[in-house]
Image 1 (tube, rainbow, N blue to C red):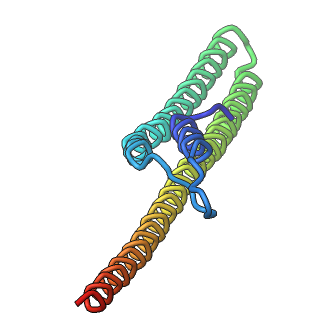
Image 2: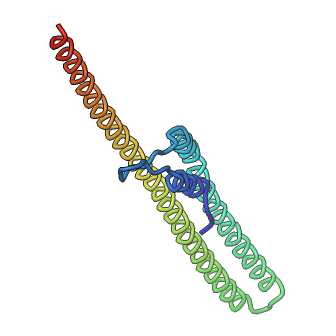
Image 3: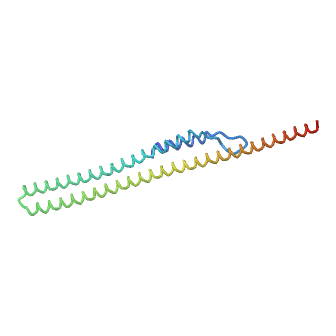
Length: 188
């Protein structure tokens, strides 16, 4: 299966995650959120293109069916012409009519068989295309959810780290002020 635009975008998304920078003293990584958002938007914009491709396959199915019907009509027409020629040339009209009926019957049967085969083939193509499009959309949605969850977790962890650092700094400042206050009281 050839790579679709969505597959390429998902690979780009994996590259951004692979290029993430490790945050010292933690198991966390910093990612380029703007790049991730841009890729997610591209995936959303690309999804209608995949649907257009599925519609093109449906149109191809209709073309196959139309060609099969035309070919069946041509076979029937040719069989009828052959039958008329046989009747006109042959002195034994009954034999010619029997042969003509048999040719028409076979032509009708072949035409019906060709239409049925074309319909089955087109249905299979449409089914495969629909399944593939659904898989691509589901995959893109799952990747988007995973990335969003990772970004949210990273933001939460970063905020907690900042909160802890501020709390420690504030505690240090209070301790220093208390020390200064104690020194000033001793000097008085």
